[in-house]
Length: 74
Length: 527
Image 1: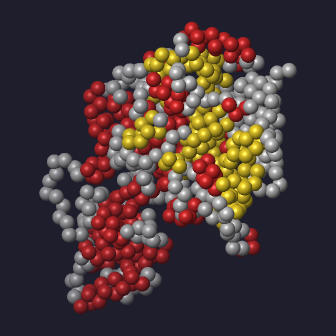
Image 2: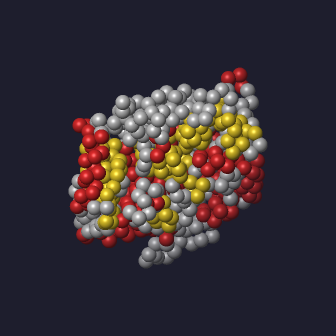
């Protein structure tokens, strides 16, 4: 059975026309949800866009720090 | 004496005929057959000694040996061999096995299962376990069977503990026995492994073709129009504009240590240091059996071997149609210059891209959303091969697994791979906002040789093969900010040819279309 290793970080994703992407992050699920609501509010296409928050794996967390999307102290 | 054109073959035939005349019972020794096969089975750049060793290796199957020789056989040699084996004086000198092998080589017979005995080596009396290469060959045959009868998924399920428990060890052994192919893999190795029937024609010439030549589209950094809402001018040259990487550029020539680059929006070419052009456009190299391409590409992993074998087998029929000699378009009037790309050569790159799509399609990965982490057997770890069987990953992770899978095929298919980390344009709200700071998205940038067409492969956006023009436009919604990982491949002497003797076709600029080419979320301008 697969096991997943999660980080203490939550990612905000959105998807439109089957093209998902990473939009932001939060140190807690609540913080990520708040930021997600802000992004949705600013999005003129929100009616056609699916937003969600999901916990990051340790692997995702690591690469997003490498690429600079997450700050070093995330 | 038969009429044979090849001088060396003619000499062998003469010698055989003379011996048969002297002794009507004379036979051709296995060494003679080996000599004939080595003669016709090697070309410039391949080693006769290596082929001879392989032909004498009892662990390599007759089918593999046939493929090794056949892939280098030209029309003249085929005709000469037919003449040789139909000559009434020489033909009886070969035993049934050798005759069958020669006839199978030129398409007159099917190779027998008990065929070709190596020169000077007796077959082993008995074997309890197969020698490693023989086990690999048997595993490849089994994989072919599973691909054909649609049962491969059962083996994957079992191997990851999700299917028939009784099949698990069998599946893992099968996958472990498969040949290992890493970034150094060549078309010859894929053929020798039995994964391909034949290598693409003209591949040796293709591997020596120039990468940096007039007409090639490249990414360069220069000052550009940065108003993303002016999509026709976006990323064209602008004096004093924002410095950014543009795809709207082609090589025009060279001047000392600089390339001359023609950029949309400027009549005269700009000078860009060659080192910068190489950094942004040379393929990335991920060497070794275990290499980190963010995820770990372990080419000894049973899952990685299985997925690579599956992809290779599925693309076999396509690969046989690839003829790199057709990639060249002769200029009208029979001038000295040659052009790669355009016309019939588009068929070559279409075949290459279809092969890459096969690699893309054998990977089963889902984007992190919903209850995906609860799906049985879905992995989110570090083994790229395991993820390809059934995995979870966002853009960077899926690009990583795709790069790992492409690695063994890059030389054999003529595909240069770059792993790109970049931004997106969808969050830009006003014309004066810098559009190049958005993040983060990852994808692969692919350049197909010898036409040097620039395309992208973006798994999570369902674009396995997309022209870079459209992918990097405003509506394509991708900015190729930087390379991710890997070493930039060292530039070889043959990589650069700006003499003008060889060029690549340039195409009219394509612009992305809203709703088709990327993510076109909320690109509206605030008032």
